[in-house]
Image (tube, rainbow, N blue to C red; front, top):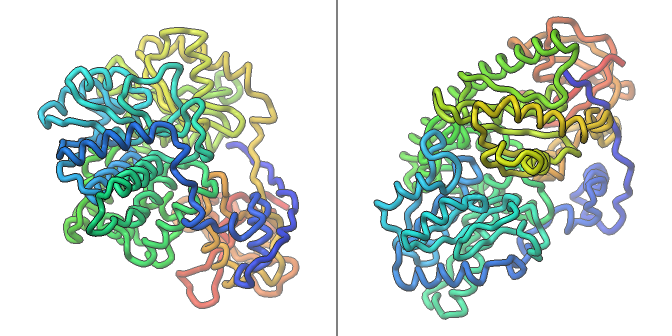
Length: 573
């Protein structure tokens, strides 16, 4: 287990004119994240970046407008994660709102087709007789599938946000803010965000052509989907993404989200009126992702597309069951990974610098979660592999990284030094995926560790928790807890406030098998404080005095003025 070091953010004075409704604590937190004014701290849709700078929009919107005008069959091809599912639902719903009458959708099955628009998926889609394929959240690396689609006479419009390789696919149009030379100011759009921007540009093109004599469709009704996909994909919440997510959360809190998302909120036991980005990341997103991991993401997309509340609840119930199964599979795989690492420590004296894990019994849809868990515990980049299907000689891998080690660039470096070793790869700075032949795994692991040794140093391997400092005695109250909760959206690149301080332990008790409930006293407060440390019970009593890194949250279970500290890290003081 990596022991993090608590590092306090430099104090930054917010300055400027702030509304009285935003307390000084929140102003200080915003300023520490580079948001020195209310407009930057709480960006609104009125300040959304215009689509104009996105390269490829002219070609893409021209093709889609022509297809809609000619009543051609548009097939939206999704992906099997939450971003891909919400992007698919956004594309289908948005095109129908803009007048497309022949819109259908498809999504690859992880176990059958592999990732993205593959030749195998194209062959299966031929029965649908599409005229134009619109890929969402993938396509930039799908060279063979796009060639197969165009060989059948289909047009292909790619929308993606993943980093491109050295060669672009031969699509009819590509919209991706991360293309070389693309001038769009925000490179952090998720796949669903790219689709939303494409729809905005298509609406403008159609408006200029006089298409909306009977009234223009309101595309902001899609922002609930945009918010869920953006948060779940862990893209940085820059000002533009925060404006999108905040608007989508407002719709969900008001009960205006699509039937499927309303059903998922209910299924995971969340209060819709208090929904946060954290609820999306830890409750809604995993339930949608579970379908693509263990079953078929078609279930998740159907849930997002249905307008019938009863059907939405049925599908949300199925997704809840799949997610429970996913948790069990994940726990078994994580236990196996930790056992393998324990054996490695006994043999080598320490954990591998960048663990490369494989088990022939693992499920390919869950290896990313295992890599993430081990990365969190060791604070080292981790790769986890599983057979593409039972008994397959092809492995599918997921990689998760730590700050300062760009995981996709690391895979590109290995691929460049050893051409042909990796069949395919793609991803971001912190997460990536790859395909590898089973018999190449030893050679790959050797090349991977060599690259890691050349790049990683002790500074990168020291885990850090960035703290917003200490709370004042009067700030341990419900008013400030609610202000912090509602002051987001918080997420990647705009982290939820975290504080640290020293406390006396008044009482404690285990909760379940792994958690610890604490009664604490702060040196400057007479009243005790309640705290919960998830995963904090390891069989031994806590020290009488602790240095804690924690979040301040309203305690809705006790209600009234109650608050609690949610402990992220505890060390003897």
